[in-house]
Image 1 (cartoon, helix red, strand yellow):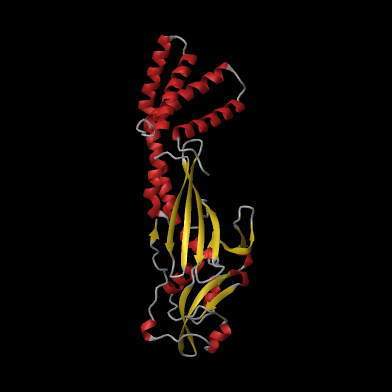
Image 2 (cartoon, rainbow, N blue to C red):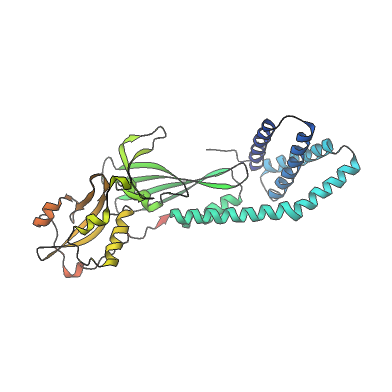
Length: 343
């Protein structure tokens, strides 16, 4: 959502909206009006502090008007000059002793919260850029992040941030676009809303847009690429625990090579994150390399050969169209390749 470049004016608009809400909650009375005006003085004092170093001409001019408004409001609630000077001194002292340290502490906590959210979402490398924009006191802003997944695939993210009425920055989420240049229709996009209880991270977003299912909070989730909501986001197929797809049980039916507890658990956890994983099967004394994906809809796994062509379990068992593993090929990584972001 675009906003004006004048940050002081933007914050005043937010305050005026808050002021109207307060007035609508309480009955009109001189006492309530006076309390609101005292809070307004504190807000204007903070505004002058926050933007005192601005070099933007329109903001400097707006701050002059803020100073005038501070004097006007002060005269209104403290008509007597002696009382006015006394109360302005109290407000100034209170600001230095309480409001200013509290603002700086809350800002630091807000920055730490945003950093943690970006880290959990897989975008920690973008934090310094986000921090600069937060310090710049923008109301709403987006941060682009893009990188190559492979020779033919790229991911383009746009991280969305906004400031609420309390002046706290929120990470709203990120929109993602997966482009597959090897396919004429290789384009999929979705906005992933940030939610502390079950947000998707950058890797899961890629896996979802690539068509795979991800297990979140006990429920398998997979995009329905044939159905979108009014915001142009894909609707979800959801398969909760009651659907009775047990990935470990399905994996246990496969003749996996190296199926010790650690490697088995690692493979299962990776598939739950929506990854396509490499595995080696022992079929009639032969070691066969395949690639696996979780398929909760049909309560099974999807198999691929070395050319990434789908293949059935029956074909696997017959040894059809599957590359036989060479000794030099026996070691493989379960984790995906590290992605190099380009800002």
